[in-house]
Structure formats: C-alpha cells, structure tokens
Image 1 (cartoon, helix red, strand yellow):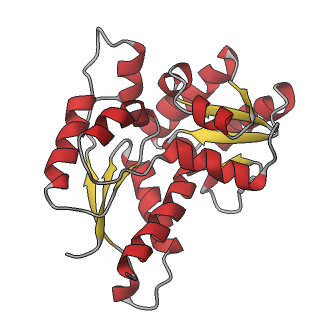
Image 2: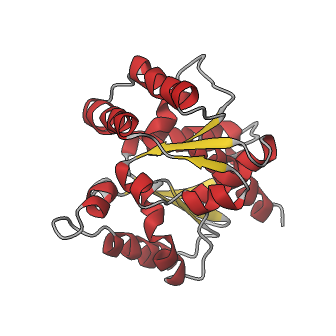
Amino acid sequence: MDNFFTIIGGMGTMATELYIKQINQKTPAKNDQDYLNYVLVNYSTIPDRSTYLMSKDESINPLPYLLNIIKTQGALNPKFFVLTCNTAHYFFNELEAATEIPILHMPRLAAKAAAKSFPKGTRVGIIGTEGTIKNQIYDPFILNEGFNLIHPTLEIQQMVSTLIFDKIKQQNVLDVELYNQILSKMFDELNCEVVILGCTELSLMEDIEGYKNPCVIDPQNVLADESVKLALSYRNK
C-alpha cells in the first residue's frame, strides 16, 4: 500500500473511532479510491497513561508498548504517525527519538490552531486528564503562542475526571449536563475566553449533533485536519 499513514489508537477506542470519522468526513471524496490510505492500530490494552503518570511506582509504564508500536509499524514505512491520545504525548520525545518517521504533535497543533483565531493575551483554559494537567503537557505550547494559560481548579478537575473516566470510558455515556457545567465554570468562574479539550474523550462531547462551541478547541479535530492535509500532500506529489 502506497502513501499511507499509521494511527496509534485505542486510547480510548471510542475516541479513536471519532478520529476515523473526522478524517473520512474531511477527505474530499467522490468514490472509494478518493479516501485516504491508513493503518489503524487500535491498541486498547495499552496501560492507562494518566494512571501511570499519577502513580509511576505502582503502575505499568505505557512507554515500552508505544515504542513497540513505533518499531513494528515503522517497519512498514508509513509516511507519518498519528498519536490519538493527548496524555500519551508525555512520551513524545522518546517516541520521536525512536523513529525517523514524523509523528504529528496534537498539543502543538491545537495551540497553533488557537493562535489563528484568537489574539495573544487571550485567556486560554485547558481541561483533560489529571495526568495531562499536572504534567503540563499542553502548557509550553499554549504559552509559546502568547496566551494566558488557565488551569482548572481542583473542583473542575474532579468533574472532568468523572466525565472522562466514570461516564465516557466506563459507561460510554456522554453527559451533556456535566460537560456544560465544566465549561460554564471554566468560562464564567475562571474567565476563560477559550477552552482547549486536552483529552480525546472530551472530543466526543463536541461531536454531539447540533453542539459546537466556537470558543472550544478540539485538538483531535485539529489533528484530523492536519492528517488529511498531510496525507493529500503525499498523494499529490
């Protein structure tokens, strides 16, 4: 198969399914042959990234599993890798060092997308897993764009964790009321002007029919845009 890319997914599976939907919808296609070539690795049994980051001495390190994917899939020579998990970007430098094949960086892309729509000095909030927030996976990229970075309070973080793990991951329930409460607190209590969804489970909330908040940036949607753009550029060479 020529001109394909590899998607490292399954973290979680429903979020990966949304990414596939996003790239297919964004691809200009009039027949089967117009769609993109890609390999999906839905590695659902990889150890939880946030759990490891919050208790490294008591949890299994996901990095060797990610490196194994890079090694085995790299042998197929994809044009680039896509990592559909925000928290997994904690290991990005190690993954990048393990291959000559480019890996798209979702947090960096999201911050740059925000900079195209909002001026420097904008109060940009970030929500995601506790591992993502406490390890500041998004922080340098948001700050590099000249934004004022806002972290969630402990109360908001607990609500976000409930939505991600208890509702979406465990029950496959998209709790719109809880999601709206979280956004309300970020916008109204912390005076955020923009909120970035630093977890692909949260991307599922923005996919609900008829629900699009212009002041919410979905990094997975941004990643899908870049994936299609890059894949088409290779096809057209």
